[in-house]
Length: 317
Image (cartoon, rainbow, N blue to C red; front, side, top):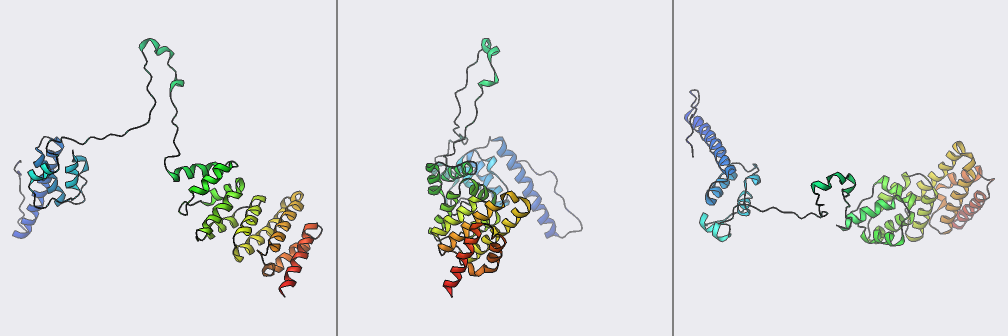
């Protein structure tokens, strides 16, 4: 250990103040010297342990893992105590007296490399390289996310549909964009996922709110119809969703008049089905429904809907 060359003493400070300053400077100097010694990796094991212990006691926030060369040294830096034992006893007890360094290894799956001689270099092309193929079966959640991404792009096979249901857990969240794509491609899957949450006693209002936000389509109507047959949908949700369906027909009237009749038929049949199933009470938004039926009275399904609404309201009186 080198002797500190220069010890500063300030004239305008007290004896105690100079002592505290000299003590701190000496500690920093000694700490730096011990770190330099540990980096050389030439010290005896017991000296290295003592140096690491000293540095850890002086500075709890300092990262010392890069200085360690075996598990015992890592234990010391992690504040694992060896009470009442000498350095020799610690080394013998842990069977690390002769250990020189930590062995790090990690197995990677890789293709067997090609053996290329100098004679065959002229035939070597980039086509010989291998593409990485990720294994999505590593964890259940990874498998679920992979199948869910497939469900957002294409109609699922029954086996994949059932596998997603089996893997699904409430903590596996589905964001708004994913939900919208799932409704377009696999509305039955969305229905089954929401029903599973309901069976587990977990509130599915988060996904019902997302359903209100997406565009009204045949798939969205089909999804709500399926849900109404298996679970009790909140009145507020149905009122908002049906009001949005009515407003959507008004948009068709202004922007796509050629598709208006078809959309009105779909919405009328959808609302009429909910009323017949006793899943929806038309009395709560009677004014909007009546205006919708009168505006599109030239369409048969809207007229039939008006009769169904009128009969339902009369039954409740």
